[in-house]
Amino acid sequence: MEALRSFCDDEHLNLTNFKIFLFDSFEGLPEKKGIEDDNAKWSGGQFAHTIDEIKRVIRKHRMNPDSGNFRFVKGFYEQILTPDLRERLSQTPPDIVTMDADYYSSTKTVLEWLLPILPSGSLFYFDNIWDFDGSPNRGELKAISEFNKKGRGVLTPFEIVPTLPHQCYIYSPE
Image 1 (cartoon, rainbow, N blue to C red):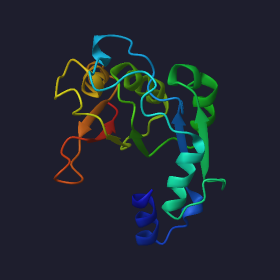
Image 2: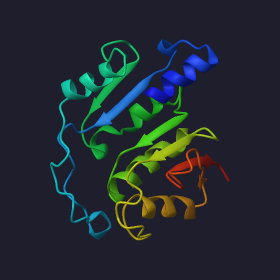
Image 3: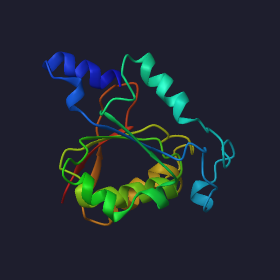
């Protein structure tokens, strides 16, 4: 939110022209679907926050979560990421995607759902990329690797902040 505000200030853009979609179960993590999701630090239901709690955080960043800028989409990804929703979002595809999906299965679901509408140069930020101790066989790293191997596009590491290497990726169609 602060990055968007700063960008708008620097470029003299109106913040209200940007749409922010928040996809979350608001029930915490789903149950693990396999070994690729298994992280001893996490369990189903962990990290649950209500929409009101998230709205308070947004207000702390001097934004109005009840404005037309924000849309809260409640549910687990497998339930809410429908073809109909993708079609509606395809008119204004995402330029920036912040992934807080935690698990391999969740990350894979989101990447596959977004692929048909991703514009070249979309920026992805993955916040839990190292939470499986850098294992390429688990978590977000595995989902990114599989996404790249399918040959329909590639997520390439993109360093924005030197202290956060390889958490940001740029999408490029092949």
